[in-house]
Image (tube, rainbow, N blue to C red; front, side):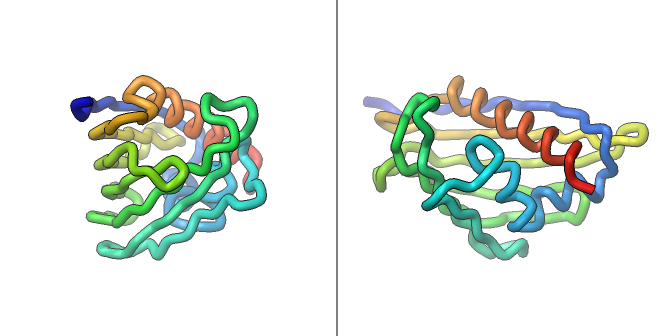
Length: 157
C-alpha cells in the first residue's frame, strides 16, 4: 500500500491572551490537561517533553471505548525543530498504534495577537502509512483537541 501524503491548516481564535495560549503548548503539565483524551489523563497516559529546540517529546494515550480505535495504545515521539517564544513552534513526530508506526508529521503552530485574544494557526504535513488514521481523521482529531484547548483555557485562571 502506498504512503498517503496530505496537508491541512486549522485556524482558531481564542479570547485569551497570547501568553496564556502559548503556555498551554509550552508547559508539559498544562498541555497534558487539554491534550489527553476527554480532557483528562487515564491510566497509562503521559505527555513529557523539554521545551527547547532539539529536545524530544513523547506522548502515550490509551484510546477510549468511544473512539475509532477502542483500547488501542497510541504513542508519539517527536523533536522540537524551532521555537520562537509566543510566535511559533515547529516539531516533527511519528505516531504508532500498539507499537506499529502509522504516520510521520511536520507540525507548525503559529501564534498571533488578534484583538484581545490569540489566533492559532496549525499546519500539519503528514505521511500516512498502512493502517493509519488517514488525513481526514487526523484533522478531525486536531479539531477536537483544539476544542479541548478552548475548554481548558476557559476554565484555567
